[in-house]
Length: 419
Image (cartoon, rainbow, N blue to C red):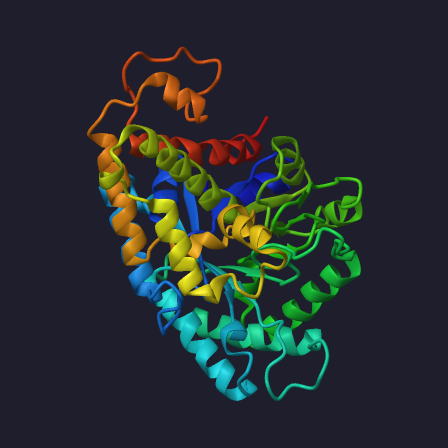
């Protein structure tokens, strides 16, 4: 089901939604292409931009990257919706507004020209020469309108214009630092204000058609997670927010839905948070499967031939603490455990490093060349406990990894389907 179909179904009172895959990890993308439905895959401004982002990919590079994975897995590329998340000056907050916004315009132009259709405009951050304190919502909306005009002037397929998402009230990217932090829920009056100001500015700039394609607004429904905790969705707390959107032609987009229970995900969809963004929960599932395979390798493969994957990636993280150093606090043991097992999954930034890739490839090759005893797969949780234990290896390491990621995705598929 496409984004427009999801929005229309919601307005007809149907319980429908779509999962937003917020990951560039190739194994995650491959797992997401396992089904038959349309797949929404998003890249953030930090991850993919005109300078390469932390993945080293421009929007055009990312488009080609996803297309290649789709072709390798025989998935129709036309069923993939590419989205740009938090497009705006976030990467250039330390620069004056004129410079940051000029770079933001190039960012948006590159995304739409590359073929990204879902465009989340986010100009909520204060820039270097803005007054101290929170940015005035009207300034934020005005800047987002400037970026919408760039998108409208540059999208290549005139039969497939951009679909916009506005708003920026989201949980802390990558998770909250403490479970004692109060979970904020977006106020209805703030959503009303965002919609009213943005609509007025769009129409003042002649973007009436673009406004009809604003399909969703980002809000915080009261969900979050941190290194070792998560907060489940409470429908009662989000009741007013849920009822308000029923009076509008839009749906909600919920960020950081990672680790929510099937019941919570279903409740979010029913309450019109119809775009569910998930990322770290998927890469965490990948890590769980790979670490389990590494333990199996330790038992079945001679020591001199082992990949030593866990040791290799741990050394890589220590050597380059850029993506975790300022986030993990506590004793040496606590930090070591967080590097490996934190729900924020900051280990995800290291999987594509060459040394880690070589080690991962060795692990998979080692376990592909042998038959893993069924009882060993059972011991490490890689087959369901109620399944019959196979006498011979009937599942490849690759399939084990994909299956583990798919277990997470399946919760979303079920929640997003109409009852």
